[in-house]
Amino acid sequence: MKITGIRTHIFSSKHHNAERNWLVLRLTTDEGIEGLGEASMLRDEPLVIGLLEEWVETYLVGKDPLHHELHWTRMYHDGVGRGGRLFSTALSGIDIALWDLKGKTLGVPVYELLGGGPSRTGCGCMPTGGTRTRGPRSKTRRRPYAWWRWAIRP
Image 1 (cartoon, rainbow, N blue to C red):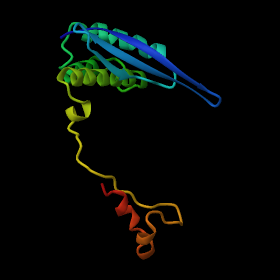
Image 2: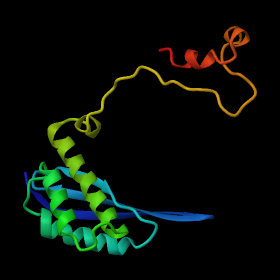
Image 3: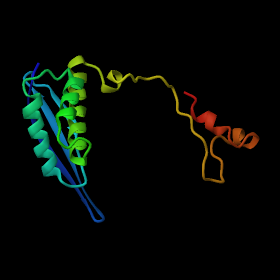
Image 4: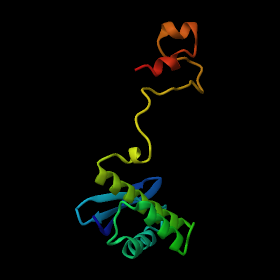
């Protein structure tokens, strides 16, 4: 499998008090698998798109997407603007897309590739900021904070 190119999409959210664009990129392969990444800034999307297209042409076209850490290292160390906003945004978008490609190729979710997995059956929570206690009435009368243990039971 080899990377063949990149496609970018800008989605805009115009609200009465905010305007925000999201830049989503797709790394395409010769086998038809696409990896999705997100490289959004508050502005300067055309500059990020130019940088993404340049890097994909220079570093990634014709390469195996499963060697994502090698590609990331080469792009990071060969880049002129290392550490800048544009550079970091573009690099993170490509990195996310490469991880997505690897997960789709191997048939596992990305969180499993990163070492995660379902390890908890509930979520612990603590009461904050309120004067009223919540939960079953019989438990909260004896111990006001007993309901937080009740919340994590399966």
